[in-house]
Image (cartoon, rainbow, N blue to C red):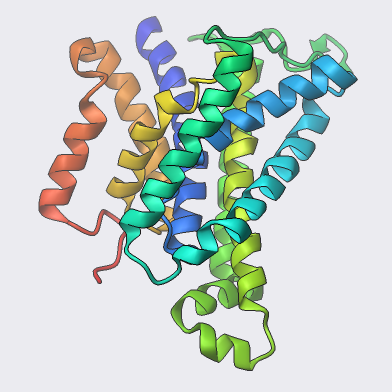
Length: 295
């Protein structure tokens, strides 16, 4: 049972990152119709941004959660304005190839300067409340020992995912963004700057990836390969949930993380492939994904 609970926790942690990254991919594809293969590299940039803030300026984890997504989001908006906007209306393959090339360049630059080994990033020890020392240490729940930081990652990821879903699906701003993807000419008639909205949406999507990178830094260390190792699984999560489906990205991300954790307990040999097996089955039954809409 101890092994089961431990792997369930690991599955929830992995699912948190699957959900955050696939949410950013779903936002970008659903709103901009771009398959953003650079998402893993931008996730890695978020972790490196947190590392630079701490090592060069002394700015810790809590401020990095705010600053790193903004910095990477601005970088993403520059990419959209200088490169991706010229692919509007073209086949998805062009966007995939361009973003894949960007990912290789970004990863290669970081690997050239920082090597392949991971760089450590400490779990924050602030704020200190009574016996609590920031997010360090753990709690004895009786049936298992829960590291505080890992519990924080699961809860906060879920809060961010649900807040993003509410913003896009339930607010007027989200309605404008969704309308701009369906009928941009009509939206322009209401005086809304559609190109600017598209740029901000892409920046928001990659900022979610950078946010996940900051939260992953104390768990997985900071490495140029950290995005490349995750992006294929995240794309499988997006396909299973339904391309462009916000709710599908959240539910499928957390759900598949748990399934992966349970597989490591009962059938460890299949833990690395179970997500892709599920993807194949789902595509056979529902080609649009579990939450996707048919074209």
